[in-house]
Amino acid sequence: RGNRPRGSIVKVGAYLDRIVELSVKDTFWTADFFVWFVWRDRDFHPGDTFRVVDGDITKREKVKEEVLSDGSIYALYEVEAKVTKFFDVSRFPADDHLLTLRIEDAQHDETRLHFTADTEASGLSSRVFVPGYKTGASSVAVQAQSYQTSYGDPRLPPGHEVTYSQFIYGVPVARDGAGFYIKLFQGLYAAVAIAILVFFIKPTDVDPRFGLGVGALFAAIANCYITSSLLPNTSQESLADTVNSVAIFTIFLTLVQSTISLYLYDILDNPPLARRFDKASALLITPAYAVINLLIYKAAVA
Image 1 (spheres, helix red, strand yellow):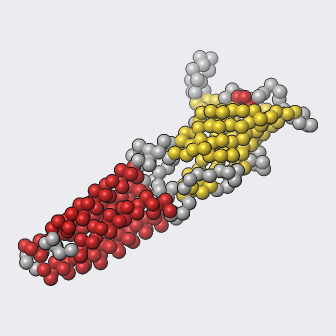
Image 2 (cartoon, helix red, strand yellow; image 1 turned 60 degrees about the vertical axis):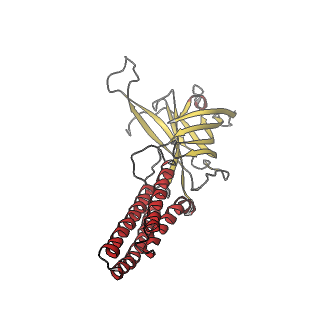
Image 3 (cartoon, helix red, strand yellow; image 1 turned 180 degrees about the vertical axis):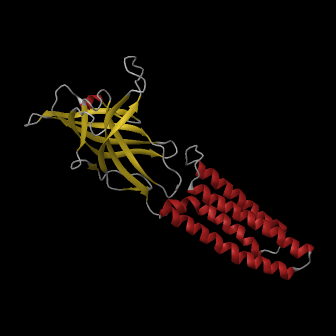
């Protein structure tokens, strides 16, 4: 690959002006950005022939084009593109992502046109804001991207490989603190707390003793639906799924505990043993649930 012939050099830079929309559920983000090209070969018009890989350009407006004093050509474009992004949701809602813009020339491969990155002028606007996330420093790079296809051209041999020069602009985004995490699970935590309250209710008071647990279980299941509605339809296990599963299992344990406590109190006619069992369960399950959730969150943000 290092001996591959390279075509005319085109310097490329980008400045992200705005993130119009970002949807983890619908697997896309929309960028409003400026991209510029500096080149010498007048046979090329890279501003007219570039494409955004995995994206649809909804706006391509030439801001300016000038011939510089050294004879090179400078062209600046304002672009809006909707980019497909399959987000890694394994740590949702404590997730972070790298948003990338990948730019290629749609007509000329690397043997005819080669990009170099304008690392000095490329950057990120202070206007860039994504609700619930904080942005990091942007970076740019150029890589060779190969496609093993002839695109149906009968003149090319089977297994033909064509390589394009690809300019990459990236900006990292990460959840801004624990606010969204707490907001998403505060109802779930309340449901588990209510289920734990049954340990302080007399076992023979069946309606509140079991009713609180069943109600908490339905609340936890409802929270599962809420978190699932924020994610794409994927088989990937997320952090939210783990938190919900731990809560459902804990509530189920309280129901099992209530059944055993009722058996001790009523069937075996041993109220002191039932009370000791309730007290031991409260002292074991409550801190265990709190510690497990703390460890889950710490592992996610580490």
